[in-house]
Amino acid sequence: KKRTNRVYMTEKNNNLLFPAAMSYGLALGLYWVVKYIFNMISPYYPYWIVVYWGMSVIVPYLGYVLTKRYRDDLGGSITFGEAWRFGVLLYFFAALIVSVMHYVFYRFVAPPDYMANAVSQTIASLKQMNVDSQVIQSVEALNFSPIHLALQGILNNVLYGVVFSVPVALLLRRKQSV
Image (cartoon, rainbow, N blue to C red):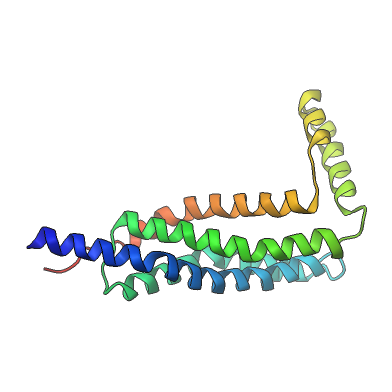
C-alpha cells in the first residue's frame, strides 16, 4: 500500500508541476520585468542601479518562497527531484516573461549604438588585460541582435535556475508522513 500511495502522489505532483510552475513563473517573471525597468533607466538615473541589484539579490529567496508554496500545494511533502524540477521550470517560465522585455528594450528603447558601444568597451578592457587576440576576435564576431540577446537571457536565467534550485530543493525536501 505504501508503494501504491507513493506512485499516486508522484502522479498527482506531476499533474501540478507545469500549471504551478507557469503561474508562479508568471509572478516571478513580472517581478523580473519591474526589476529590469530599473536597469533600463539606470543609465539616465544612476542611483536606480542600486534598486536593480537589490532586487536581483532577492531573486533566490523568491525562488525559495515560491518552491515552498508549491510544496504546500502538494500537501507539505516534496522530494529533492520534484523541488529541483519545479525550481528550474519556475526560472524558465519567468525567463520567458522577462525575455519579451529584453527584446523590447534592445529593439526599440536602447539607442542604436548601445550594443556597439558595449562591445567596444569590452574589447578595450580585454586589450588592456592583454587577453589573447583570438578571444578578442571571437567577441568581435559575436551576433548581438535583439532576438539573440533575448534568447541569451533565457539561457542565462535557466542556468541560474539550475544552480539556485539545488540548495532550495535541499532545504525544502520533506518526505510524506505515513
